[in-house]
Length: 323
Length: 254
Ligand SMILES: Cc1cc2nc3c(=O)[nH]c(=O)nc-3n(C[C@H](O)[C@H](O)[C@H](O)COP(=O)(O)OP(=O)(O)OC[C@H]3O[C@@H](n4cnc5c(N)ncnc54)[C@H](O)[C@@H]3O)c2cc1C
Image (cartoon, rainbow over all chains, first blue to last red; front, side, top):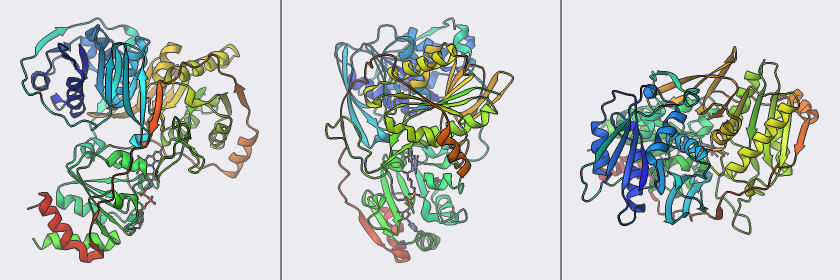
């Protein structure tokens, strides 16, 4: 059996979890089933999540509803996953912060190794050989996990989520496991909804307009803001921009920022350092605007305009206004 | 006053194509140079703020040259260093956690107990995402990952970070282990005074406590860059109409 931690986002199975379920189906051998483990605050409506799991070929969904799970505590979540996963041969989660954190707890509790950010894996008895992203995805490591179960997280957007060909119904098993006091020492005591924009809206955006050092200063974002608004998109920036204090960090794209996954990314005045590329390489189409035709962002893009963003963007806005 | 330990890692600073060592098992930073991850620079800044007159120790497990990264942290206000001299490539995340725990226990035996231990959320090179968690379990302490802000009062750390539904707050009794993500604080620049102090600050050099089990790494490969297939839509403002018609072709606008 392959156990997958499924995270809940807006009442559905999170995108990273859909990716993990797709990956798990690929790993499952003949007669192997995929089971999902869902931990959520008691009373959460999980019917759509169970439906998503079934659509992705999950045979059984384990749901824990202990009162102590009303607010997030990684150790408690890991304890629930530990019990539900039982003697699974692979325990998998999407490579979100939360998925990685919970699996790190689980691996430590079972005294087993764990691999983060896998992109492919081959399980052979008690040895798993896998490829995973290191250096933000600029380098691929081949490694062996000489232990069973194989505990791994899947790199974000490494796999296209695809529902199962012939899904069946998923059996739901609800349990109320006892939660150890020690596992509640670190738990969320409050959540403040973000007032302005946030990283989450960037990671979900279908269109992102990017700006880097080429913006020139804190006042250099009028064009990208207007273009993003006009296209119904969101602004993302490079680390140079956030570390100079021109824009807030939650707008940063890259290894230490957000990993975006849009249909269209329009990076303006961004060179395309590997750490920035780490956050935008899953964009379906990139149209770069840069003064340097040799900048990595330009040579890796599908389309480019070579020119000064402060001249090009106003011309684009005017052109869009004509329509 | 809080005694704080921060754990940092020396990593290659390549921003362009990454070079591998001759045996294909490591990253060669001789040309790119080395740095500390932005996450860990923020951890150092938070440690300096949280220490508030207490001991602020910076620790690394790494080769002899990793003294540079320790000195950079000492230059911005850390008070002393611990250098576990070892080839970090030979150490898996479990090994690193065990070595840090051993150093923490040795300090404890010597009379210094750390109230708060900070690490980067995930190393910029190996991205293992687990050293902090393993360390916390080894020490029997609670752990929170992905934190951007830390404040300490009355033996309790208030921690905030970004969760799926908004900004999450934790209140954790000390001692505790916390891993840091960039974005909550701006790391300070070293002053001339700071650099002078860093040269003289005490750095305890330790040998690893046990042989490493290793990380399971077989080899590294650098995927070839995608072939340059860029279609240049034009130069300067004159390219605006081509940009708009490309958006139409892509179905972004009608
Ligand atoms: C461990 C680590 C983690 C990191 N994490 C991140 C991260 O998460 N995100 C991130 O972005 N970076 C990250 N970085 C930093 C990264 O290495 C680069 O330094 C950064 O991405 C560069 O930002 P930039 O492209 O805006 O600036 P630059 O590299 O300076 O590039 C500016 C570009 O703008 C172009 N330009 C200049 N003026 C104009 C103009 N008027 N019009 C059009 N084009 C113009 C130039 O030709 C150039 O290509 C990280 C670094 C490390 C070591």
